[in-house]
Length: 272
Ligand code: GLY
Image (cartoon, rainbow, N blue to C red; front, top):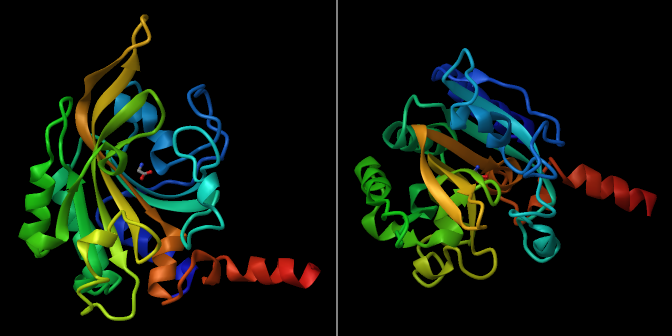
């Protein structure tokens, strides 16, 4: 599949499942001083998650243009060093505003990955939030992956850095569950297709989809400390890197070799 076909498959899958297809917002966030550039699909829905705005739909799907070159989600230092980082990219996302929650988010993800994208299960790894003194472990997410058919030893706990997501220092946030893909030649290789490489060094496995269970709002108090309060309704915000899933499905080794980016590299090379 081309990158364009992969984007369309994602959008139309969620559309068939009751999601409103919403256009990407511009890269400059409107009325949000917490953010310089749009850094995730959920930005344009921030006020919906917070309960400050209502829309005439409770499910949405987007392909959002993002820049991560500063602020809380800054990939600038990784670009050129890894196979999977860019400063500008497209994020595919499905959203629930107080409608479905963990169980359906995980079911949708499973069906899309296995039945539509036909990804081999023996290359997939799943992670969930291990919990800390502020937010409990998300064992429900772990159990749901196992119920869907994931092998228990391929569902791994991680801490805040990998499995708790918030868009900026303040704003909607929650524990997340991520899906990583083993990129090596032989899924039967117990050394390489192993837990060590998940969120580990290099690009042996790459994380390509993040399912955030939006439950909290982080706010800053007058004394500078931060508090966590519950959102009006538990919600879902997911983000899949279009260039990463295209790298996986086109069996290439870096985002820059996909048909989404390769023509740009070739054009720049021709000028040079
Ligand atoms: N909002 C989910 C993500 O950016 O990964």
